[in-house]
Length: 111
Length: 199
Image (cartoon, rainbow over all chains, first blue to last red; front, side, top):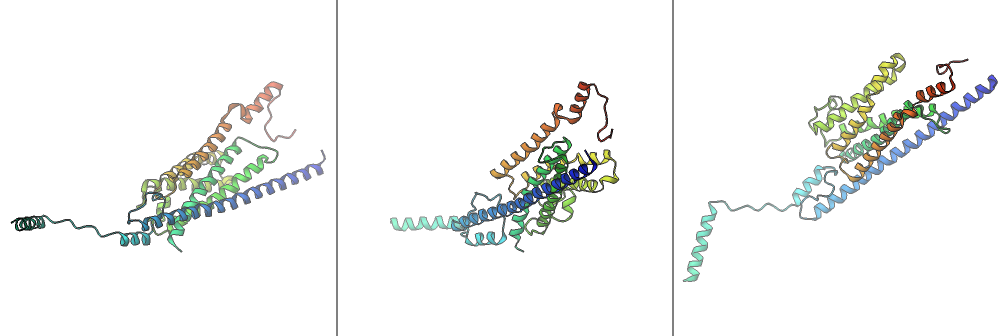
């Protein structure tokens, strides 16, 4: 093996290693960026679907995908606005009055 | 920029970083095990390990930046390096901070590899075996992320299988190059010569 041949072979191997590495890293980088965009897009689409189904219903939160969905303030505010107002329960002071008036009505109707 | 975009970007980049770091760990194990083929000589494996580790670190930097800039989760700059001090999900974010600290140590010692002793560099570099599972657990447990999704669990399993497979290949006693060389020397009854010594 002559010195010239050894140098040429070494240079060839170095070039091959450099090209192989650059190719694999390029492909891996492009795939990584594509995967990032795909995951972010899929999560965004899933969240949109969740938000749509939530707001179209009675205001309750859809259980599907809530753990992975982005908690947007605007969406939460719109859900809160769309939700029906909570029913006010009768206070203890009102109950006897209502009971008394109902009894009185029943008594007058009955007589 | 829309906070939702940052939130989704942070999550997606975190997932891709896990995949990249899995590849880096597998290639690191392959480098330590002196794995090579015709298409991928040992120098190519080592180069690929270095290049992919730089790419993975860049992705982690984006993951951190988007997590800080995102307005929903309250993560400060200190929470990135100081573990378990975050107001949002302190344990799981803290695990990420531990992984980042180890990554910084590995990166700095690798950058100044020639100024360090081999023993010191290797001691710090071995902490990658701790960093990788900590990062994986961080991704699994952090709330609001994709860790509990079915596809993410499948991806975690694939990553774990890849690293365990590489470790199994590396730790097989009959595959260790030193063992092979020793057997060859014993079989041929030749005196041992150091690698790279010219005759």
